[in-house]
Length: 149
Image (cartoon, rainbow, N blue to C red; front, side):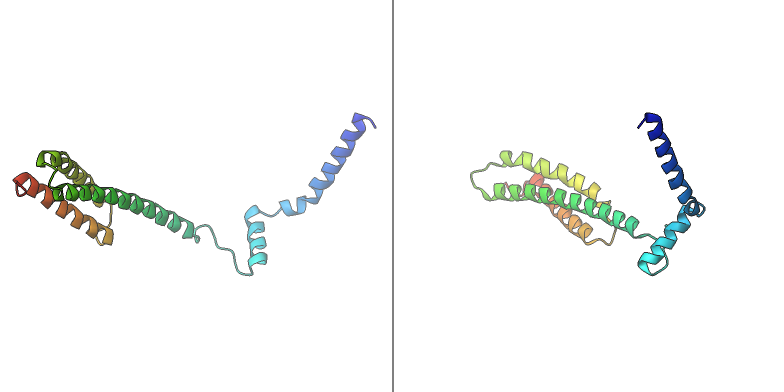
């Protein structure tokens, strides 16, 4: 068999395939898709505008990711407050050694206040944030005022 014979066979077969598909090419892709989806599901297909769930899920995932980041940040801040508490309880730790921890609590408190603004007003997490931030501010104020001297 020659190369020319092979190309003739390939061309002939591709012509048969393309002529067989001409009937389905006359319909628009959207119409064919809708027809197939109605056959498979037994109910009318929804238009793209009607499908809102993936967008809502994406927003929920984004919100969940933001909430997770905020919770992680709050957890680290609570660890810092716990370190401060342990230093206050330890009679061998001098107040000068506690000073850097208090400064860190004050700096982290400012960051937390900015992060809390991201959350909606009626969010429970925002209430927790507010309470923690207020208590941290009171502790910083007490330490700076000299209540623990």
